[in-house]
Length: 262
Ligand code: KIV
Ligand code: NA
Image (cartoon, rainbow, N blue to C red):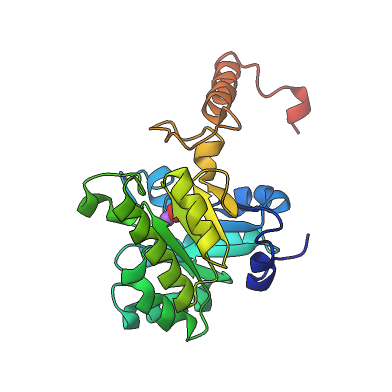
């Protein structure tokens, strides 16, 4: 399939839902490429791949390493690189770090968390030639300042705030946005009030696309499963069974057999 661009991504709005999935390496990115529109190198890799409790300690170096791997494995995919916590706290840092993404990888855009409060950053990046995917609603990088992962849009006040956030980053130039952990009716209303695609995770079916963390949807990540995750595969069981079979066969000298030897 042909590689998506910000133009072809935007043209899907109102036509068909976008399919986004995370990937952190070339191996999986290549497997996901045929069935996805966009691959997100999410800072969620800090949890599932680096084993940390949240995303906050992810670094630019980590993101650059994994984004390179994903771009190498999925040359025909539109690749989104998450800007990690603390790398876009002011315009200058944001631009310098986003430029590093473009210099060191072939990613197509960066993603930053935040709404109206981060619109000036989105504006600075987009006016300097960096395509930006926004991220509003539940912001994993704010887990400590929020005191946990909290679903948004539960009150009228939160709903109005989210609408303001979506409109502000659209106006600042974000070509699309992720909306995470938001009540379905509110997410639906937000997708209707902006012209750019709104890609949901834990935001119901009536938005402009869906994104899932691959290790969650393949059932590989066992620590916890958020309500919005559907496990399309019982990866953990499959992998553990395969390794156990291998171990048993090695123990009994049943592997390798004649056909595996020189
Ligand atoms: O880091 C990530 O995987 C993300 C998705 C949850 C959207 O930001
Ligand atoms: Na992220």
